Structure formats: C-alpha cells, structure tokens
View (cartoon, rainbow, N blue to C red):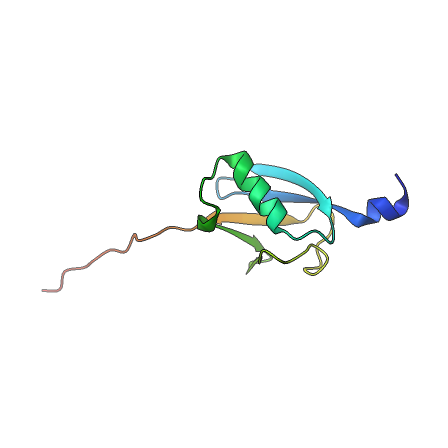
Length: 93
C-alpha cells in the first residue's frame, strides 16, 4: 500500500453506551452515513433513526466526512440510543 492510499483511509472506533467497541476503516472522504448504517446492521439495530452518533460531543450528520470533522486515526465516535418518553409526572397537592 502506498503512502497516498494509507493517508486516504482512517481507522475509527465506535463506542456504545455500554462500552462495546466496533472498529471501522473508511476513506477520509466517505460520508459517515455508511459507517452509521454498517454499525446499526452489525449491532442488530432495526431503526437507525433512534441512534445518535457523536464526535467530540457534537452530533454527526449523515453527509459529514471524517475529513470535514478533522478526525484522526484512532478517534472515537460515541453512540447513544434516543429514548422516547420517560418523563415522570408529579402530582401537585
């Protein structure tokens, strides 16, 4: 592999809330939707719309690329599952 080919790819770690880690190797110019979809497929997540991917605390958009976000080899993407509801109603006396 030439230096240009090596520079064109990046190794990323995707970490879930329960500390499971999945590793990906993608091109720096590839839209991150591909990584997101592959992660959901591997984890058996049937509705990817309920999953949020974060890099440095900021939500990753589907069209973002590692290059746009300034990602480096070994960087970590956090995955959180969006929870619907869960609010507690307090009775007022």
